[in-house]
Image (cartoon, rainbow, N blue to C red; front, side):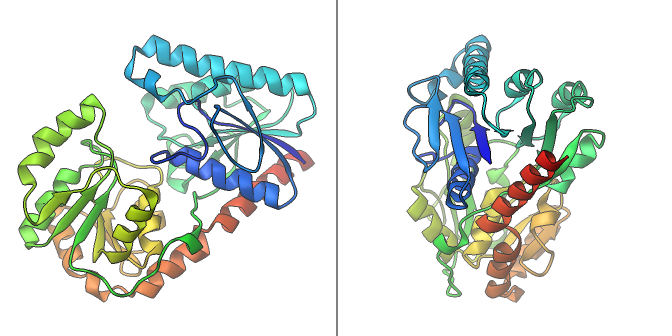
Length: 348
């Protein structure tokens, strides 16, 4: 089977630091090659996986994201169209796996071969309107990263659901925890790390905050909602390396994730659990599919309940956190899921 995998042009694959889609695609591409498939990755220059590579742009285009919407759209469309033109020019791919956004689907609609499209983001009102235009597109097969996503638009041509994954063996497991809570992620009102600060203050516990806060909107949020909380017990350590991040996960008493939106997955939660660290988050979005209440963490219904959940994390067995990830969110499970979807589509 010859597979073309298309990703957005913003970050190389794998990413040097932040890049959720790119991490997943790098893992998928390498594992598919390891299983004997002929894989070509349509990405940007500087990417490095065991798959073949083709790029329209010589380097990552993330700097464009801070410019005008028209420049962003032009870059995305140029990359997507250039990728699909090359796929059609080569002419011998069996299937395309598209991991871009709307611009990729616009090109995919006109392809005379099957296209698998993973919906990595939320299906909000704007996206729902766009996806609805493709309900009759017979060559496009949609894959969700949580069953929650499918509820927003049940009539799409779904090929299945495949959870995102990590290489569990690369995450250090520990039952010996240090006395601190942890938040790792973006700094914005949807992720709501300011609530993590409020939780730590209410409970008199130490909190470590880590993540990117370099964009203007991130700094605005950080300065207004996070900076006033920083102290000897609540500290911000910046955007950390992969190694540092894993050590933070390994040592934390609990990973607290007070999201204020219906997140379609949340890979940081399974990263924490892989290190034996229980998760406390709100009961919304895909969180109930990742966190089993009372088994590998807790699902809170409101702020007071969140406080109660954090105080109960000592009841969670660290081994159950790790086992959950090994069973449901391992790299092999994800790759097998996509492999089965590719085969099913090609057999139709």
